[in-house]
Image 1 (cartoon, rainbow over the protein chains, first blue to last red):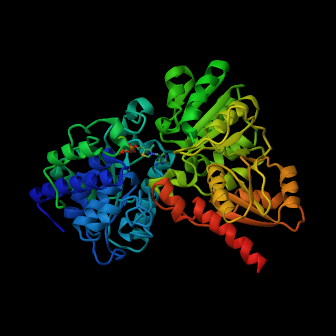
Image 2: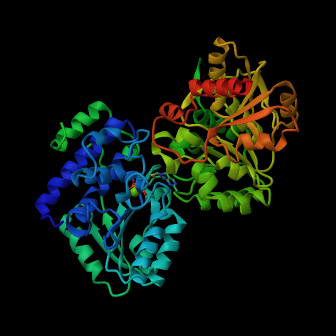
Image 3: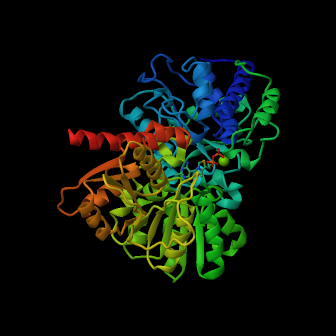
Length: 276
Length: 312
Ligand SMILES: Cc1ncc(C[n+]2csc(CCOP(=O)(O)OP(=O)(O)O)c2C)c(N)n1
Ligand SMILES: [Mg+2]
């Protein structure tokens, strides 16, 4: 699917709307980190990636691994756009038996690629998937989105070393650099800067972009694909809670659902969605 | 009945203990608002350390601090405390018998809507099988306070498992927690439920339902899972024909298994009620109780069936 930038913006707006709709309805969830990641994920699904909706396990598909699994409402809202989940299902987020679990569940929703939720594990999995692509001489790309707080997990850096060792130029990591985690700012909880230098020191090709600018996201991925034998980390500078004025950069909206009142304000700001 | 969240009580108790013990240090891994160590963090900023999202590091640093004679409380969610950092808990804390108190919140299904990846049904099993480690699942807010105060006094490692939501208060302030001792909350005739954690109050409710049908079941709170009260289990096995273990944990390796390991050769039948070797699902805590048939009605039904099947 290759949509132009205007289409992407409109889809992202609806995805934000439906993401918040679901979280409000569920009464719990993670709005901040979902909203910061929307534009990146929309660019991937509606411009960059190759896949078949009807065949989620198609061998040659590009893979997207949402390592920061708490942002899954945004992924579900994208799956709704793609027709993978129905309007009625949006109302079942975080309910027993629902395909829309609190964190992505590949047993129920194979399109999700990886059952994340325990932070720090997605990059290793992505390394494995990319390595398998090399073994099988496939030309698919493996994309993985990690949080900046998540980058504090040691396993991230174990995976980083291995991706370099195995020359995984088919692996493209994206860090949602929104500057916040649960307890506060990453730089006061456990500093990760200078982040780009760290990834470079681990042997990666590193790009820094505005994670809310579609043309920057897309061109960074194009450049990453040109990498000869290095994995690429795109550090996407984002705003946690992006798109809703009173959520932007507010740490408390990491894991708190909007109240009904907040939802009403937010839904106006987001200009309405494809649902009621 | 009053309700208290165990984790809220934990946060308050840490504050008290911080005043009593100058050598008490608290660590967390980016979930201090949820585990409630944040109140200690605010009161004693020099003795609180947030290591970020890095549970293995959390346990390793805790062990190092404890090696200098300090009392260390290390907190995160139970799934990460027991699973993510298992090896560090085993090698750096339990083997050298370090004075680290792992207080893990959001245990079992109380992690609720976050779903399978956040719901550890295996933590009791993992922690119980490590030598030197003691495992406690308090049943209410009052007991939580007593347990936290007690383990601060006792040297060596502990794993304490706390629930997320506010749950009914069972005990009054006169209750005294004794390590390795269960508490008989109710005597019965036809059988006894031995429960831990949130399942204790649920068992009490289940037993009330059964009483209306003339089935008289006792209830024991076995919050001290390791060491377990061997003497009490032995006497229960003599008195009752049925022992029902009840836990929000896999029936493999948890309280039920711990009871089975010490049950003397007996006529009594042990029936383990808990999660049946499965992963979790998203939902509100109360919804999940029903989903996994751990609500009072389902447990009453299970007990009724076990007893009547046997009678036939
Ligand atoms: C291993 C692990 N530890 C702790 C948590 C609890 N947790 C969920 S989200 C979160 C903060 C994540 O921060 P970040 O990676 O920056 O995500 P974002 O800001 O994009 O939401 C934490 C600590 C977890 N899910 N996994
Ligand atoms: Mg962040």
